[in-house]
Length: 201
Image (tube, rainbow, N blue to C red; front, top):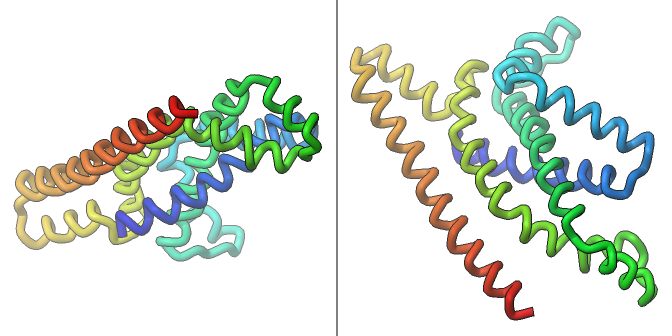
């Protein structure tokens, strides 16, 4: 479950983060306040607490969510808040003259964002977002606390049968290390490609 949990959660988080960043960048007052409140709550509380509230707390209100969907919801919302700040910072780094130039040639706000600003912002934000993805791979181990059968949970079950915690915990640590190393290599190659492409423009 580790890989699908990471991929699905991070994909949804990127959508949440982008929308939240755009709301703040567009300076829509009411929506901006809601976005800031969402970011404040999520960033100010531990991920593990959020998992426990959604999986064990919501049933008291009659809302029962299966472990895997609950993990996806929490990881997506959590990472979405952090990604929103990363993307917002990248958006604000784009010179305002590019927005004005877009308006001058007849583009609307949506066209300017999708064709001019967002592509540049994502290139700027890519290293930070990649680091967030690597962190999420490791954070999925917390899903074991709500009975999601990811690597750590499976390891704990094997330990209960074999009584070899040292070997098995080192093994699962090495697997996480391999995942992180592969993602780091992909990150560096993609960064090099984006920098080369950006310098050619």
